[in-house]
Length: 211
Image (cartoon, rainbow, N blue to C red):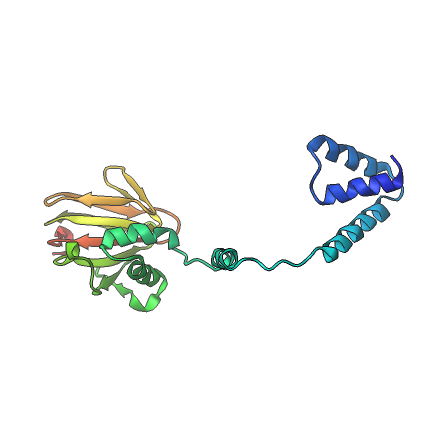
């Protein structure tokens, strides 16, 4: 293979248009060629010259809008927008405002239980939650929430971290748990980030050890 031929193949190598066998041949030829670096430099210069000669095309507005939207940073918990909207019976904009509270230190209040913090939600929710108490709960890793009994329905949606209850069941981000009236359990936050979950309480809970 002459030097100009090899240089042209290097152009294809840099453009990633060679199949694996051809790529191996070109790389092998370069490894023993005395002017390999010059050939690489010439190939890069050819590619740059070609790029300058190509006409500039402005993207269509729809394509540009999609590109800008794809490049925009997404909120940290954006994947939970739809599940949270369903959970709270609200639209995704309202769900996003609630999810933003997870990282807002100012809204969290220490609970009477060690290692537990609470964030009560008093914003309007859907009619399904009209009589319920709704909030966020945070537990540091390793903290145990003591055994308690539910007076009414309880719904939980894990937003961050994971928990294991006293049956061995593990809940992770995006998973939900339903507890009916009269049910009881305890759970522990697993190692990793703080456990944060949204909870819907109908009727409250009983904590014998703290009554």
